[in-house]
Image 1 (tube, one colour):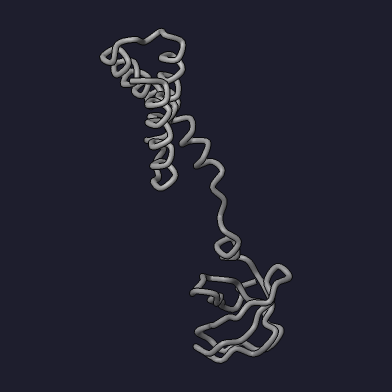
Image 2 (spheres, helix red, strand yellow):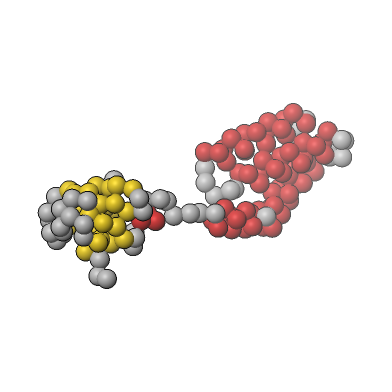
Length: 142
């Protein structure tokens, strides 16, 4: 295969990686670029050798670098702002009748909230969960 054909393989693998998860096609794309460069410099003239080098590079990249990248990406996962509210405390701005909406202030933000028990205005509450864009709250135990 020619330099441009290997670059095309790399581009296709890179495009597939964009639409999938798991970092599998990324390594094929990188191996494709490396093989393309080796072909360009005349180091891999035979197709059989090109395919063998491509397969070996892909395998080595998956074995040695994929775990590092997956670990790095997973370590940067952060709890979304809404999920981070679970366990936080706030104050009711309005009274909340069971299973009807009221308003609470948590971390300086005003949220629509629902509770299973009646809560008076200015009651300290704890966020127990989230239902869509509504907080599920209960009276704080402290």
